[in-house]
Image (cartoon, rainbow, N blue to C red):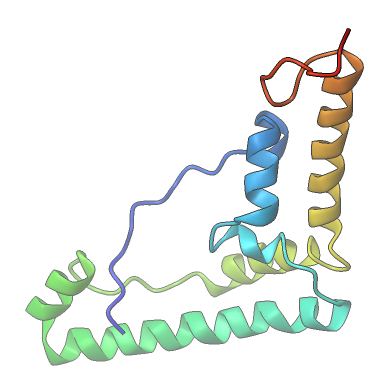
Length: 138
């Protein structure tokens, strides 16, 4: 139950990166991006945001209990003076949007399409993808 607050990471957009970034998102998504890069059905996409809210509310209740039990230990553990009330409506809307991107693997499919298009574009331009000279070229 000891989760320390981490500084928020700046997320890069898929369209702003190179092929490596797209591949990284598709095959090694962060804890936040995994919601967008997982293949789920529409029923799961409706229920998962609710589960996220239940988990967030539960975490808040545990933090309040820890704070009431020992405020000094709470501050040391979480790095803040007291628990912040989560904005569950805003979070629910955000999580719903994240999970909806995963219905039938839409986001994963689009990321793969972008990666393949970039690879095909490099091949059409005659650029070597692996940085090696073609051994079969005359």
